[in-house]
Length: 227
Image (spheres, helix red, strand yellow):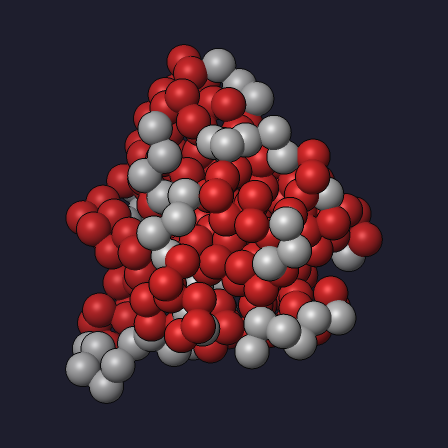
């Protein structure tokens, strides 16, 4: 995601730590905020998608989260922990968006496969069987209770460890383990858990969708300098 889509002028900064990037942004190098977005787009989208259970609402919440993160970047105490800080902001955005749209409720019905968004990362070589596996896995995860779905998304798809997940969600590590165990048990009754190997492709957020978030956020910030 970063290597393929990042503005060529910013690639020289890719090796900077989050803390170093934040310091440069605070010092006035505002275009570097693109680095932050591209580093965390997929993780935050998946997190918000797990909470809101809706692609469009998740993208709206993601945009709002980035706008708030940019506005309050001086409040980040770093140098580490930017991801967790962004996720806390994203949580508040999800609550706001969910309430506004009256959509903060669990969805127990299976989504119509024809309504699932196309993933622009699939090339012509992607087989129909592979695409159906991804679709089936996403629908099964969508049907999990929200608490289980969020933990499963962070632990199994994003690879966050137990401590990180517990800290972000404000729960005990033991609760993370319990919820993940129950999520897996529920999924086993619906899908072959080998679908977990699809990890990077389930609820993917790359290509045009990733670019669109970056462009929209900069547009709302009134910045044109990232080009």
